[in-house]
Length: 605
Ligand code: AGP
Image (cartoon, rainbow, N blue to C red):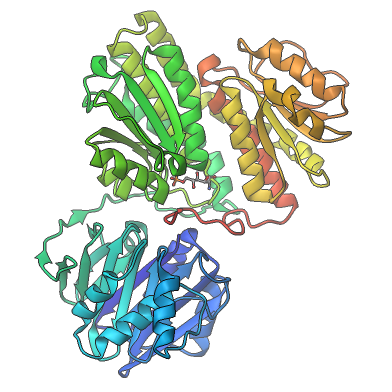
């Protein structure tokens, strides 16, 4: 999950490269670097840490070239230090790379056997040295094509050449890469988000494509140097391009704009006058759908887990869920009446994209639930259901998770209706609850002060447990994930009914246990699981939407949430858990928007 930018211009490019790298930092922030062609020399500058560090270097020692490449890194091979930072250059070529070269060790051995020396521990340097070898006898495009044919694994590349000072070559296999067009200036970037402040004209490379980009021309080729054409997309003018406004960080903004996110998403898909759902162009006739498989990673997978309960409850469709990195290696039985739904905020997650490719190769009908309709996963699906959440910058997903759940619920409700799996009154009741959701979310956000008090209970704890049953079980997993990724504290989400099968051994005096118990068919059972924890000294933080007076001396904190009907309770009950993780991370002075070791879009396996 690294970020790449390349700019060929008629003026100095370093400040635009820096600005683009700042937009790309959500893809990785272990190190940053750039290389420009300056008086026919490759001028490489790089540092460990954030783009701000690189910017300070440039203030002291400017780069003046009118063609250059830049990179922000999420380390895969080699520790995040300046030696391993990209670009990786020799005297005649400089390379930035996003992806993993799986046969880099073998290639490195071959190069070293020829006496070639390496400076870094990265797989990327292998690419640089292979191209350098090729350039001794060939032109840049042929040198790059010959090099790429030796590589196994994934790459998005940006490459500049000392002796060919007006071109940048880009290449893509498995990691996203886009081209942007402007006047006397053209761009290469990992995604349109990095380019949209400079242009709204974008082409996307597909796997196996290369581009040769200069300030006034862009040409596309396949790996055999045959010219190909690529469509130019005109990007939507996204008014709410991410900015923090008055918020301290993106995550708090994204948590507190969830009522608006819900409203926008619901409005996109429902007709409040006709009291219906505007989803029509199903890739499979709804009555023919035998099975739905929902696939995602991390938080997106949790939205799949929630949706499984909805499909089971409201439709007669068989539903399966899977983690994308597992799905892609299974021995799968395909059926043309199966609909495969891929959930991904970024639309670039490598495992999810690979799982989608497998379904496409087997001619399955695919649907993607994404936040970026320009993304790889969206472009490779038969059918796209955007979540309309606007750019989500905080690495920990909040409003996108909410949008994913809302879209999946709306899809489920529509399918249940058109297949006549539910009667009209059930449809109307659920649609009415959905229309009340934004208000319930707005009310839910008001528990922040209570949550801030709860947060203190975690600082010295050895770990914590999040428990729930039914629709609350995926929310327990999501709450634990949020706490882990934001505060770096151990936390485990578990089905409440499973505690007695082992994890109860973890319970000891004072251990925080968050019990998520909406007023549903599991409520009494969850209370008895909670008693098992109390009996062993666990400190209960109880989250419910039940009106009944439940708070007693054994419950350290009780948070009462707005009731929105059983099926939509997971969406409301997620909010206190997002706030909890946020406030624990604040107390621990963690980086809220860029937690350590993570990146927003996991574009490598
Ligand atoms: C969410 O808080 C995490 N940062 C992570 O689990 C994320 O949900 C996962 O990497 C999937 O990303 P995607 O939705 O962009 O595919």
